[in-house]
Length: 216
Ligand code: URA
Image 1 (cartoon, rainbow, N blue to C red):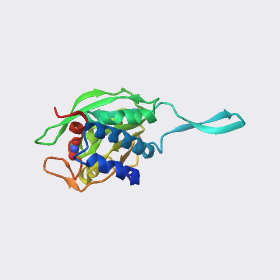
Image 2 (cartoon, protein in one colour):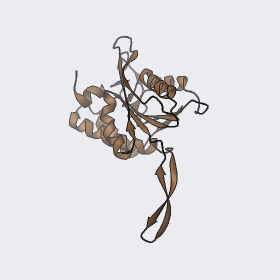
Image 3 (cartoon, protein in one colour):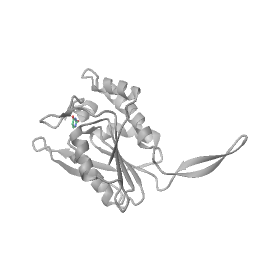
Image 4 (cartoon, helix red, strand yellow):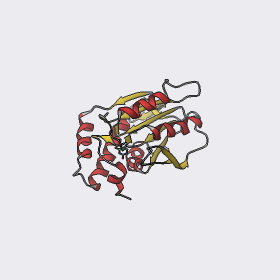
């Protein structure tokens, strides 16, 4: 597993506003949307392209076109939905699959309640959207689902990550990919201090799902 920390001043600026407890739902949604677009720029750096020729008004240029099969974007329900528009704006040709995960508030163990993924992901680049990489349990499960279906790569885009979560993903997927195992990367805007005893990232930003969609 590789970790890419997008330590860009614009990312830091928008993350600071996102963390601010005074940012309301409208501001939080807009910031999450903008941040995913910035992180997606890094996350798609290794996406496969094929060379194409393009005729310009004055000649022929060698260009690039996204390769087939098209990438798959996987928002993790519910908070990952807040990152979907920003990602599909950059990759409008991508397909979208869904995984629903919820965690037990006491044990902090994540379980899958929805799985709408293509059965065969052979050779496909996949992008998992989950704003908070906390314990890492959710991400390890989702990467496992994508790996079982043959994904070529899994890149998780997380607005914030905890060291504990990164370590858990690294432990589960230590290699660089190949031989039937996807290349796994985590792209994040910041690596925070730690988790608290409720599994929240500290200092973090609170409950991303609640801040995006309201408490349920
Ligand atoms: N999920 C959240 O929404 N926030 C955290 O801090 C951890 C997990």
